[in-house]
Length: 332
Ligand code: GZL
Image (tube, rainbow, N blue to C red; front, side, top):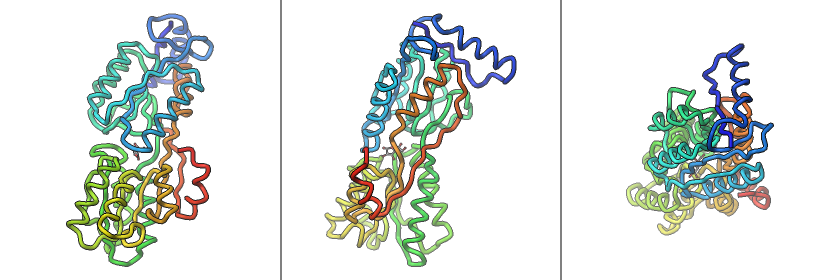
């Protein structure tokens, strides 16, 4: 089956652009290995997807979205779970290159350390799509697009809520960060800090990674409670760590949502349920439902069509009342 010679966006416009389109079209039905359709062909696109892991409710929903979308789009999906280890993701990407897939997509567990393997994919003529998380590569020709949320904005939304909620009151905040080095952890932290910077009464007194897991959130919150007598707010980078913090707060004989308020990011079902019960006070949505957009991008890329270099996910925020109203229709 034909493997598509992917023409990177490094080509300039005009004649070269026309040549690029001609190359993309004539690669249909030629080449070796892999398999793919440029729209006109009838062979199925083969996508290699290197997932971060299964660390949170968000990740599980993201995996389900990608698998369902591939089935719906008639894309053959090769899928791997890296158990949150970068070396496993790199191994998976290399195996997809060996298998000559038509397109590679992945959610980089951390921002750094991807240039070498992305160059190998580029040299093999296989386009790469970043979903969910970004890389810090300076060479943007190494991937076609980054499809995912604006994590700085998510942190800013959480910070804005904290400023509104606490005003000029002396407020001690403890921050439970996501995975060290991950784009969402770096950017959510930055966004939140930006918004509270103008309020010296709102202070982050402790900040530590809970690795985006419920167990991690509980462990970190237990330590925070032992070493900080007055905690007013928990800012957890995802719902799962916020839910772990709730367990620790209740075990310490305090009331989550009242004695210690909690703001989180994701809006997965368990988080929204805790919000509807008043145990979490505010959630910033981060949608995991990227599957359909990913398949659409893959088809466009392999058909030689232009794809925006950055596709930002549309998302909102939830108060307790809004969570109660939204829960019955929540897809994840
Ligand atoms: C965000 C995503 C994060 C979620 C966590 O896009 O990468 O990883 O916020 C997940 O729940 O583990």
